[in-house]
Length: 204
Image 1 (cartoon, rainbow, N blue to C red):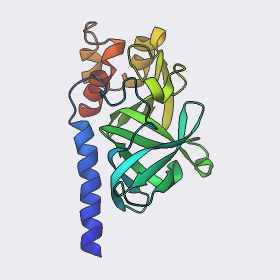
Image 2 (spheres, rainbow, N blue to C red; image 1 turned 45 degrees about the vertical axis):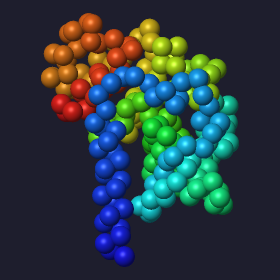
Image 3 (tube, helix red, strand yellow; image 1 turned 180 degrees about the vertical axis):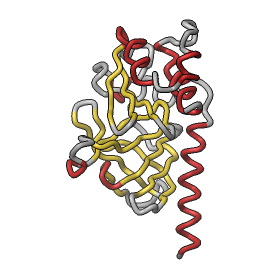
C-alpha cells in the first residue's frame, strides 16, 4: 500500500511538472469555442487523499458560468461518478486543467470552487475568469476576455485588461529579475500573460 501511495504522489508531481513545462500562450484548441460539458475527453481526477482516477471527464453542473460538478468514468461502458471541488486536488479534461480554489482564503471552511487554469505553477497560478464574459467555459477565447485571475500568496486577484500592467507590476514587483524583464513592452503584453507568469514563477 505504501508503494502504491508513493507511485500516486509521483504521478501527481509529474502532472504539475507537465503544466510548468508549457512554453506557449496558445490557448488549448479543445477549449476554444467548445463547452467543457459537451463531450467526454480523456482525463483524470486526483482526489484529496491522493487517489488518481484515470479515464474520461467532463463538466456536469454549472452556476452561471462557474462549473460546480465534474463527471468521471473509467471508460464509455463504466458507471459515472460525480466530483465537486471539495473532493479533488486536480482534474484534467483533455489538455485542460481544472483546479479547486478556496472560495474564501480567510475562511477555508467555506470550501472550494473550480477554475480553469491558464498557467499552473509553484508560486503563482493564472485562471480564466468565469465572469469575464458571457461565453464562460462554453467559449473561452483569451483575446476576448476582459479579465483573468491570478492566485498568489493565498489570494485571488482579478486582473483587468485596461489595468493589466499596473496590477501585474504590483503583484510581481517582488521579483527583481522579472521587473527587469518587464521593461520590454513588446513582451509585457496582456495577451502574453502565460509567458509573463511563467517567467515570474521560474525566476522566483
